[in-house]
Structure formats: C-alpha cells, structure tokens
Image 1: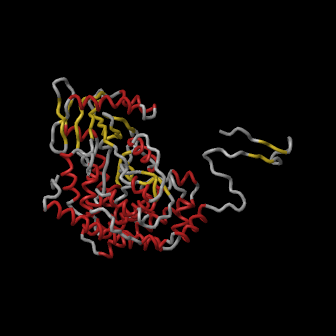
Image 2: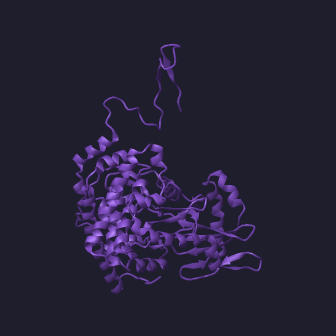
Image 3: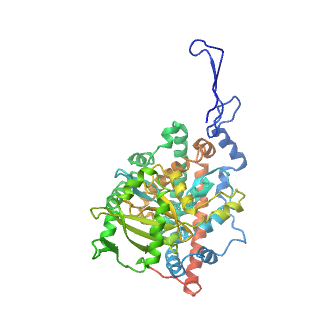
Amino acid sequence: MVTEVGVHGGVQGAGSGTVRIPRVRGFAEGSGQGARSPKAEGKALRERIPRQAHATLDLDSSRPDAVAAVEESNRGRIPGLTPIRVGRMAATPFAFLRGSAGLMAYDLARTPMTRVRAQICGDAHAANFGLYGDARGGLIIDLNDFDETVHGPWEWDLKRLAASLVLAGREAGADEDTCRAAAHDAAGAYRRTMRLLAKLPVLDAWNAIADEELVSHTDAHDLLGTLERVSEKARANTSGRFAARSTEPTEEGGRRFVDAPPVLRRVPDAEAAAVVASLEAYLTTLPEDRLPLLSRHAVHDVAFRVVGTGSVGLRSYVVLLLDHRGEALILQVKEARGSALLPHLLAAGFEAPSVDHEGRRVVLGQKRMQVVSDILLGWTTVDGRPFQVRQFRNRKGSVDPAALSTDQLDDYARMTGALLARAHSHSADPRLISGYCGKNEELDEAVATFAVAYADRTEADHAALVAAVRAGRVAAEMGV
C-alpha cells in the first residue's frame, strides 16, 4: 500500500507544487525518460526470433511414438473407460488432435518461441470455443475448456488453433487452399485484435466482451445463421432440461438419476457421500454472495458421467440439486489432473509454476482468460483427488468446426483468432505481443505453414493409432 506522498515547495498555489508518488507493488513504473515501451520491446524480439521462424516444425528422432503417447496419457485414468477415449480419438485426425494436447506440447517445446508468456488455454483447438450463459440470461461466446491451462507461450495456443482448423476443414471436405486460408486468417485475426486492444484504454480492452460486435470486427457475417441456430439450442440447454430427461421421481418426492450406460450411471452410496461431503470445501472457494443461492437448494442425488474426448477416463460427477419448487440445478464435479503441458514447459526451460491444487489452477486460469465466467465456479477435493466444480449445462452451445461450409470455416477461424487474442490480453500486455506480431502478414504466413505441416503430422499419428486398434495393440470402443 502507499505509505508516503510528499509535496515539495511548501504551501503554494494549486498546481505549483511537485507531487512525489512512491512506487506501489503491483503497479507499473511511471514512464521514465529513455524507458523502452512494450511495443518497442515486442519489435526488438523479432531480431531474436524472426516471425517467419514460426513456420518451423522439426520433429526429432526422440519424439514419442503416437500410440505410446496415447497410452501414456491414459495412465491414471479409470481403466474401464480408456477404450472409449481411444475410440473417440481414432474417429478422425481432428479428434486425435483434440485428445493429444501433451503430444503437441512436446513438439511445440522444440519450435522457436518468443518466450513471452500469457495465461494460455493449453488446448485451444477449434472445438474448444462455444456459447455459455451469463448471470443475467445472456449468451457469451468464448474459450470454454481449461483443463490444460497454464502460464505459457502465447504462440502455443495460436499454433494449436491454426492446426486444428486445417484438420477440421479437411474433415469437412474443404480443399487445401481453404484449409490453409483458415489457419492464415485465424493468425491474422489474432494479430489485428491484439493490435486493436493495444490501442484501447486499458479498462476498455480489459472488459472487451464477445458479443454481436465480434461478428462485424472479424467480418464473420457468413457465420451468423449458424451462430443463431447454436444460440437457440444453447438457450434450451439447461440443468432443468437435462434433469427432465435423465432423472425420475422418488417415493419421497424428490428425484434421482436414471442409469444410461456407459455415459451416465448412479454410484454407490459411499462414493456419492464423499462427493456430497466435498461440497462443503467447495463453498469456501466461492465469493460469499453466492452462498445464499446455493443454500436454497438441497442435494438429491449423485451420478458418474463420462465427459468429452480429452477428459474421458477422469472422474466426473453430476450432482442434482433442487430448489423449493423442484427446479433443478446441476453441478459438475470433475477431476483436475496436472496440465499435460507442464513437463514440456520445463523441458523448454520455463520455470515450474507453484500449484497447490489442480482444481484451483483450472478455475483461476479460466477466470484469467474469460471476461465473464460461471458464477458457481470453484474447486474441491474428493478422496484426496483435486476436482473443479461448475454449473452443468449452463446454456452451453458449440459450433462443430468440422461441419462448416467453406465460407463459414474462414469466418469461424477469424472469430476464434480474435477471441484467443482477447483471452491472452488479460495476462500478457497486448502492446508487447502486438509489437512483435506487427502490421504485415509475415506471422500469419508462418503460422499457416506450420499448421498445414502439423495437420499432416497429426494425420500420420492418427493413422498409427487406427492401425494399432485394428491390430489389437490398443483397446478401443468406437461410436460412444
């Protein structure tokens, strides 16, 4: 805190004195004479890491075998569920990429880096953007998966997004020029958005939110119809609707989950009791003004529910709460493992972050990247394992990038590139990144070249996994 403010020159007329303000920890230094601006520092970085260097993808002979990497990433997961995870990854090359954040991090750790860090998603592929509800019933579009979030190189997120767009485009049947253009334009939108944020007053840039203006900013008008359809579905995607389909009334007047294997199953009483008991610790991670909201709900049941591609095999529960009218609120209590990026960050020479709870890491990372986050986001521990807690089916909706038309894919690429820049700008100075990225398309071209090369590599990795499944080396349950 400020401990001293000296006014020199005695008691004189207003404005005639000199105010000396000491530096306050956590605030920036004043702009002294000769100090180099963040923008200039960004420009200077180009001398050490030229922007065209980001086209580089050199895979060394020590790179893990793709199948071995999948098997290693299954370690610690529930064994009976890993065949579902493998089956989902084996479906398409894009699906393989979605489940292999750790393998890509291995490769990215061996590429040129500016070493400018931000809070990154760690898994910023094209399917990890979507709609969700805010506290007042509106819809926000933003990044929406943070299991791998960590303080790391901003370009890792950008390159993962670009490569995923190439794979999604190929799956949709787009030609190579279209796929490359999507990667190129995602990088261009990232660069231009970061430049825009660097020019805005800091508070305006900080509070920039993803609304209908994003479509105009990124010239994504061909995507409007798709976004409107997804929005309509998202508004109906609520806890109440899920409870109506997945629960049944009990004799006591409450409700309970109905088994729907293998995705949803009720759990033994002892397991359910452990999950419910963990909610007490969860409450301590919430702002106090949220507590009256939850105190007006009672816990009625707990079930285990299998989650998406990268998280299959982790422990994940849904907890059914009902209010005095019998209206449902469902919380998801999902296991949080260490970020798959961490060992590769260490291998790249970055310092190990201090993490006291993996659920807390996920939650704080999410809050650092989103302007608006789930009001019930928190964390807890169940049987010694860290978990994150959030609302389930909070009016969530998503665009399937692999089902977009050619015109829509390019629009979607620009929109997600802009969203990623906005998310990074909360923890990295946009002036610094913008200074590095510059005005021309040099970075865009390099990222597009990398994305095409990495998409080719992923297709080869996917083919290796499919071959291993067919040979019986790896168990897979397809279509689940």
